[in-house]
Every structure is written in C-alpha cells, then in structure tokens.
Amino acid sequence: MLVLAAAPIGQPKDASPRLREVLAAADVIAAEDTRRLRRLAADLEIAIGGRVVSYYDANESARAAELLEALREGRTVVVITDAGMPGVSDPGYRLTRLAVEAGLPVTALPGPSAVTTALAVSGLPSDRFCFEGFPPRKPGERARRLAALAAEERTMVFFEAPHRLHATLEAMAEAFGAQRPAAVCRELTKTYEEVRRGGLGELAEWAAGEVRGEITLVVAGRTAEEAAPGIEELVEEVARREGAGVPRKQAIVEVAKSAGVPKRDLYNAVHGV
Image 1: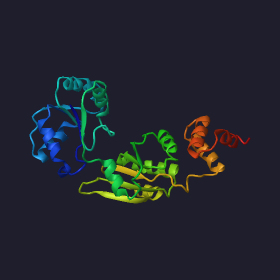
Image 2: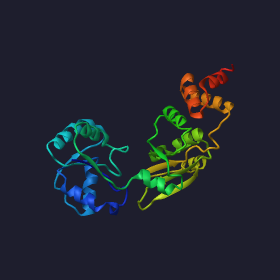
Image 3: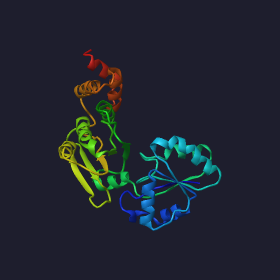
Image 4: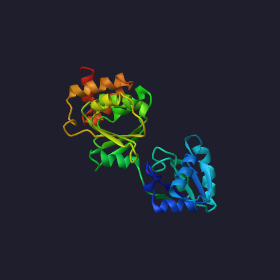
C-alpha cells in the first residue's frame, strides 16, 4: 500500500499517534529531506526500521518507478514531505498517479496542512476556496496568472517565498485592487507565528521590509459589488492584460468570459466599432 503521510508544519506535537505507528512500521519511507525525517523521528521518539530513500523534485520521476516496484512486491511505502500533505506543492503526485493506474491501493494519513490552517486563521470566507500554489517567479508570467484570477469569487490560497513576497503582493494589488482583503500567514504553528491582515496595498507596504519564514497567502475572492464592471472597465482590463503580454484576442475572450458579456460586444468596444 502507498501511504501519503502528512507531516507537522511546525510543531512535532501535532503529529498523530498513527503517524508514529506508520513511520515505525513502514517497509520503505520516501522522504523529501531524509535529515528532516530523522529529526522528526527523534522528536517523536520512534525508531525507523524500514529503508529510507530521498524523494524530492529533482529525482521524483526517476525514483517513482523504483517505489512502484516496491509496492508491486507487496511492501508498504510511505511518502512524507518536509511539512504538510504530499502532493500539495510537494512530491507525491507522480507516484500516486502511477499506483492508481497500476490498480494498487493508495491511502492518506491526514494531518497538518498550511493551506487549511492559513484559511482558518485568515478571517476570510472559507466555505469556498481554491489553492493556487506558488505564483510564477517572472513578473510577466505572474501578472498574466493573476490577471486570469481577477474574476475568481472563491477565497484564494497561495504559497510564496519570503524574498518574493513584496513583489507578489504588489502584483496582486495591481490585479485585484489595493483594498482587496488578504492575510499573510507566516511561520504557522511555530514559535514566531504571525498573521497580518489588511488590504493588499497595505500588506505590500509592510512586506517591503525584511520578512522571513514560511509564507502562506490568503486573498479574498471578488465580491458581488466588483462583479459587474462597465464596458469601459472591461476595455481597460483587456488593455492591461495586453500590456502584461497576453495577445489581444485571448485577452478579449478571457475578460468577456469572466464578466459574462458577449465576446462580440467587448470586441467592438475594444476596436471602437
């Protein structure tokens, strides 16, 4: 059986008794960082008897075949990442897909998740949300991705590196509006946990200083008041997306779809027909 094991995102005490049992009994443990796994085992006061192999972004594809063979031999293979649930912006998806395609059993050992933890403490609506992972690093690609999310009505959750936080918040303020409510969740469950709430513009100003640690961003979705822009605003949005590198035709299609207006009407407005 393949077991996707959620690891504590900060406090080792958040580990469940089941995690202790599974790590101690597994035949093979595929760890994103074997040193962190050993440290976690020491904190949990357990001895790992199975074989430990590294399983991270650079070797995930190559290692998956080896792990799949172990599963076919009837072994219990546990995948564990540095923190949170495997497969959520972490290694795990490729092996899970292969195991499913091979008809092998797959289960998950639920536990801590930065996504749901940040969502819970953000103070933003949590009845409907989407997880967007890490925004693109390059400014142009990031602007295009955020522009495509401008009409998203669900609360959005992102991961971001601390050294890119300021630029990302500025790009979000540009795409979603400086007043759009958001929360920056830093070092969740750890000693220096901090949650900053406010408008994107305000948070961008704060992030201009030095920010450290693991970052999870929660951004409110578009409200009903924002959902009915006039044709002039839609034309401006098309122009803004063009400026970010999106071809005009594609920008018109995307904006018309998100606003719920006929493409022909927006095309005519853009071209002054």
